[in-house]
Length: 431
Image (cartoon, rainbow, N blue to C red):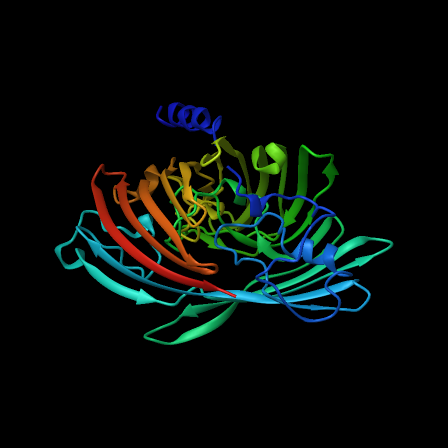
């Protein structure tokens, strides 16, 4: 069998993997200074120093999240701080020797198999994924700190039209958070920074409506327990039907951090209970799904960091970047009316090299695999590979250029492959 050996290799790679400083879940120090980039429009900056420290030390921040807010509004007593920020992001792309016909996002799942002469090159540009957010933080004597966060993004519709979508909206009170946010299954600090909006094929990535409890266990240990509203994508037949889900996805993680929170290792587990309609027996069937992920980030030198994540489970496609929304949570079997939760394996291993304070390089290799889909025919997805190198340069504070090369490869059950290449250039201004 292929997957145990691949999983062991990915797990071995993980023993060396970095958490960027902005992703560390730390309490702001008492000596925190108001950053020079911050514009305090109203209020007393000294009285609100602790709250500004919370704004500028975001918890579980992903690389694609915006930097802390530039425009700050503080009350006179230092009990409430309100910030507004975001970024404008534009990118241009060119696909060659195979193209992905899915706009700005490089989905390896959508690579044509085999390659087609009419889909061999593509040119495009977009300001998709530019974001604006508002964040309010405060403190109470009974519950400690609280936070309200709303983030919107500009998404491209048909033609040249753009719309606005809610990307995050949540309320945090002490150690309890409720709202729509990145899934607790993810480890944002272990993700490799890339220019491409989609990211590596085997990366854990999903948003969900959730309730999450995050207790604290001193300086080195962290954990979470969460309930998520399930989003199930199924491949149906004439004898099966999708119905509303009944049970929340249950996830939990435990994490050990060191080097002041800049390095960590995390173990995450999830349990799912998926339901569908069996039209042959006129009955609802429940299928158990589960997943385990080992992830981490380790700084092995002052300028070099290694990052990795590896996951394995059943019915977990919704939480894998390349498989999300393609119907792999439940798939058909050879028995009419029966669906199964297929096994999946996904991993990502990469590195970040900080050449200077304003310039850094990243690279990674990633893969996503699905098993148990023999009943879906020879054209069914088997696995995809994603390899990339990216460079980021800050011309001035808050103005960043990025350049990335991506190679993608998809293989079907028949053994036939398709591939694509892309170069993407990006400009991003944070405010």
